[in-house]
Image (cartoon, rainbow, N blue to C red):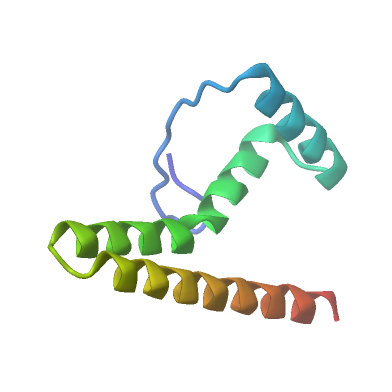
Length: 93
């Protein structure tokens, strides 16, 4: 499967409970998009946070100070959130 820009896209199957399915269905309707496109967007938006989780986990598993690694994770998470808010704010203008 490829996108219009020629980049390969990986495909997965996800099973959702009724509550999550209903929420995604409703939000997709409000956003004027399909459920798969909404799910893709939500997951891709989470990638920076997922990368930070992986990095923090690997630091802790390699023996680094757990509290320091978690504090760094929180700081990076706040930075990512601030950058996202700034990006969203600029997009609205």
